Image (cartoon, rainbow, N blue to C red; front, side):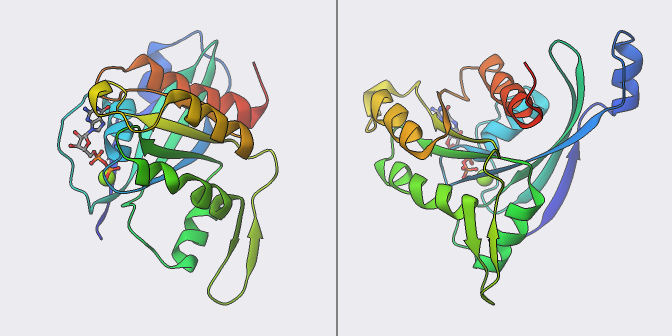
Length: 202
Ligand code: GDP
Ligand code: MG
């Protein structure tokens, strides 16, 4: 797979525009996991560019970057790792898990199979064992959120909102049900909350 970097407004420019912002930006790395087709790339591109394009190269592996002010005034430099969602060996997964400060695990409410994958992915994130037997556990306070996407497709719904909520509660994760197609603000809010939770700020 190719790896590219996509950049939105450079932080220096953003800082000039937001002169009320004080302090230096804080780099914050988010990895997004979930089965192929659930809308991970759509989710990331929505946050970084505000656009919904519709079709995304499923094999492309990117790190997106966005300088963003988390309200009230935390300047954050987001780095977001999009993943292809097909099986990768444990060492590759481990490398990605070590890289990230926080995690988003996505399923589609129209695809029960993608929902069934969530516990496995959550446990993979919390404790991974690489091919050479190396063990790695994320810190217990690492933010992990579960996102049920495509809730605009209510006629094709296969997973109820309460099932999503229940699973997230059992796994100790926050939960959101969203439509990347229909919203921008909710997606930004998820990224904001991830950061607040990581920094333990309000
Ligand atoms: P990925 O494989 O997880 O990266 O999934 P993509 O981001 O490539 O999205 C897979 C397909 O689902 C694309 O055709 C998207 O347009 C579509 N999609 C993503 N999010 C939504 C959504 O919220 N609603 C609807 N209706 N389609 C979506
Ligand atoms: Mg993708």
